[in-house]
Every structure is written in C-alpha cells, then in structure tokens.
Image 1 (tube, one colour):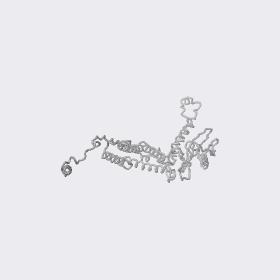
Image 2 (cartoon, one colour; image 1 turned 180 degrees about the vertical axis):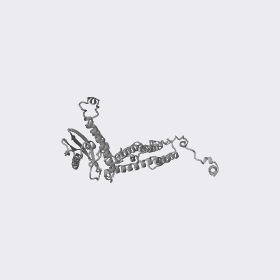
Image 3 (tube, one colour; image 1 turned 90 degrees about the vertical axis):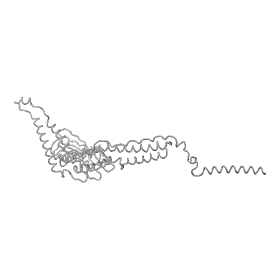
Image 4 (cartoon, helix red, strand yellow; image 1 turned 60 degrees about the horizontal axis):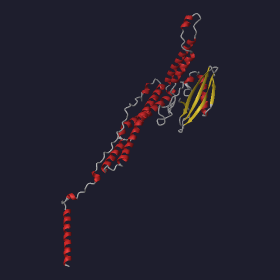
Length: 377
C-alpha cells in the first residue's frame, strides 16, 4: 500500500513539472521564436523571371494621301471625276496597305498577351501567387489599351475616321459630277462645260480631218520637185482613228457609283467612254465618233432594244439612214446579277463603216432600285 502511494506521488510530481514548462512557454513574450511559422522549402526556392511583354505595334509612318480637294483643279466635270476617282484609289490603297494591317497587328499583339499568361505564367508552379496576379493585372491593362477604343489605337482610330469621312465625301462629289445617286444629268448641270468640251472636240476632229485630206492630195504633174519632197504623214483614216482615241478621253466619266468601300476598293467605279451627245451614257466614243447624229441615234436604239430583253445572245442590228454601207449591231454577251439587286450586262457593239469593222465591248449596269441602265465601262 505504501509503495503504491509512493509511485502515484512520483507520477503526479512529474506531470506537474511538465505542466509548468508548457505554461511558461505559452506566456506572452516568452520563447517568441518558437511561436513564428517556419518558412516552407517552396517559399525559399528562387522564383523564375516573369516573361517580358511584347512591344506595342506602332502605326507605319506612311503619309495619308492629301488629295481630298484635288478634284477642284479639274477644268470640267469629266476631269473632276477622274481626279476624284484617282484620290479614292489613293485613300483606298492607304486603308488596305496601312490601316488594315495595323489593326491586324494589334489583334496579334493581344493574342500574344493572352498566350503569355495562359501558356507560360499559369502552368509554371514556381511563380508565387502575388507575381502571377501582378502579371495578370498588367496583361489586362495592356490588352485594354490595344482595343479599338483604347489609348494605343488613338492614332490609327483618327486615321480610320478621316478615311471614312473622305471616302463618303468623294463618293458624293463623284455622283455630283457624274449624275449617280440623287443627282441629275451632269450634262444639264454643267451645260456650259459640255458646250466648251464639244467645241474643243469638234475643232480637233475638223483639224485632223483637214490634215488627212491634205496628206491625201497629190501635187500637180509639173510639180515633181514638190512631189519628191512631200512627206507622208498619215491618211484621213489614221487621223480619224486618233480622233476616236481622244473621244474616249473626252467622254470618259458618265458612269455611276455602283460599289462601296465595303465591297470594292480601288475607286468609285469605272467610267464609260460615252460621247458627249444626246446619246451619252449608251454609245462608246470609239464607235460614236465615227457616226453622224442620225447614225448615233440608230446605234443607240439597237442597244436600247437588247437592254429590254436582258438575255444573253439578244441581238439588234441597225443601218445608217444617211450613208450606204454603214451599219452595225448590239449583242448581249453576258448577264451578271448581284445579290443586292445590281444587274450588269456585257454588250458587244459592232459598227461597219466602208467595209471596216469596229468592235467594242461595254458594260451597262442598273443599280439596286434604279429604273434604267447606265454605261459604266
């Protein structure tokens, strides 16, 4: 019994001594070093460097075409139309070769930012959470600045706004000078210019015809010396051919704007070579310049006849009411209908004058909702 009590007392004393030591270690300010958590081997390992962000693409320093008002230098509505079309081609080229590629480069830049985070930072377990989060925040900020409405797109956005405004303006001025859209016949609006252009054209043709007659005239029999010195400078036919080539230039802008910036870059639309007569917009200059007014009327009627059919192979012939051996035809070679309602007919015109055939292909189009066709090429 006494021995058992002694063992119990010794056990209690030992327990009391351990309790005292625990209480002492738990008191505030005592053995603080034993209270702080020990760093894990993961936290002590070196952290790899985060990937570098790519450089922000810059807009190329290619100058924007300064041609918006250049059309005003044109002497007449045909020249103005040519200048408008040339400027439209220039700004379309700038948009295609500078602005669109820059926009794509910004998209590629944003894709690279995303890739760096999702494929490089996220899978790497050696990055601490704070580092990954900081990279993510910076990535989002850079991505936002590269959006179409972001700060890094400000210069390109201004250029795109300018392009859109210039193209809409040039389209309106093109129609004002050629008669498309809601504008009327330009030959009426610019009647004085038409008169002056016709005066110049007729004077040139008369001068060339006179030169041709002079070339064909033979010197008198007694003037062999003069005959030997005469220099052949071309026939009346060659003079007429040269005149008809100029006729294409003189009447080259009676087409219509039938496309759009979204559908076709490269100008406001090709322009037909209509002669400046009452039949402009139907006859091409290469044929019309060889015909008198009544023959032009007959040739025009042939085209009007086949236009009414709108069928491939439709053909209408005409003969001159004033000259023997002069006639021709109009034949529809192709019909092209667009989903938006635009329809274009490819027509082959043939004129036979003194046994010589002149063949010209033209294109006439009808805009969506329009009632008539217009010569566009």
